[in-house]
Length: 148
Image 1: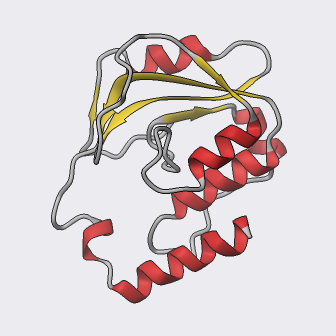
Image 2: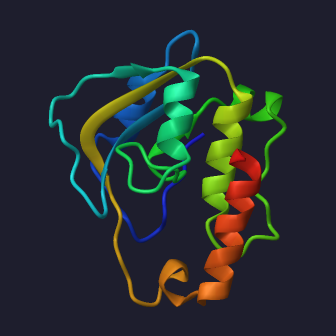
Image 3: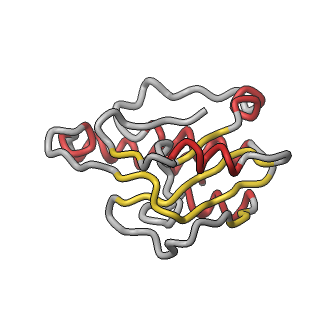
């Protein structure tokens, strides 16, 4: 299962790159993205990440992998086994919590292909840019409660 924001830009090989990473034992695949940074490597290859390495990546802002759902594909079986749903009580960054919970609850291999396949488009009227600081604080507190 993969997610994309409707106004973002996907490379023509976005889906293919995600699908090519899935093999036995792989629970999620992620690709390079451009938002606040450009991926370091432009080489099309898959790097294996342990569950711990992946959790470090998704539970901190600004990392190479990021905690977003939109540059990743998740095994649907793994989502079901982890009994995950988006927390609809959060009005912002529910994807961070979903991703952190997925990784915390899901053992297996994670693959990262650093080649740029997803470009996040910044709009001044987007949800992330129109939330008050109080709402953003609630988001941060929800994630911190989970990651301890």
